[in-house]
Length: 269
Image 1: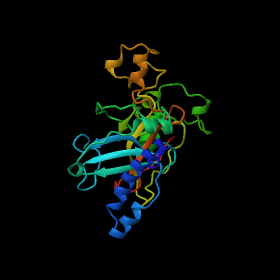
Image 2: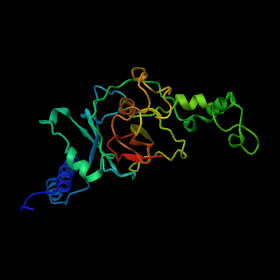
Image 3: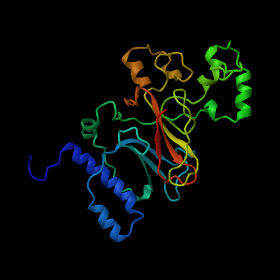
Image 4: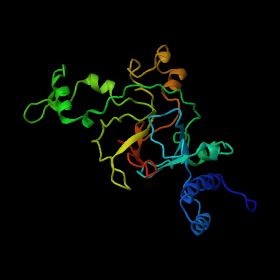
């Protein structure tokens, strides 16, 4: 390899390290900034989403910032996400992410296909375990389906809400805010690691926009209702980003409710 030529891994790592270092340097002294420039390259970051305050008033942006850039290390650890809060007035040029290098580093199922958001606002009901106890009890009592063994507590009381509530709450797919489906695990303590305040879902990542085995799903867009399951067009609509989370599951980027610049967390149920 010629002297001074970088590998794909090194190029992607250097680009991502500069982005991470820039945010940290914003709060650093001159001496600290000099030290940052001498640090070794960090893990490459995969771009997930770029969100503008004008498009998403639901997001709490730090003062003076109007762009949120969500980046991922391709891991499923809690600290594998970075959120860079930017001021659009400071951006003087637009660079395309090194897609080929990232695909070489992580593989096609971890890197995303380029997408432009077509947002649609919905009413996203909370996951039932997040409801107040009295509301949860009322919901359980109005369940019309017959109870089975797993649905009953030791005293014979119902434990779960009607299946209709599952279908209407915690919407699947990529989304901003709302609630997440915790059917495969208990809801964890959603606490900011920096200040111990509560956290809220900033961005959900999902393998599918609706359950692929349920073509009549409530969450399947009307414009896709004529697509035939199993065909390339159906699969593209159901999996537009090409991203696979865990075992074809989903995960969430959670941000501090008190200070969005605190460390975000990535949680997969």
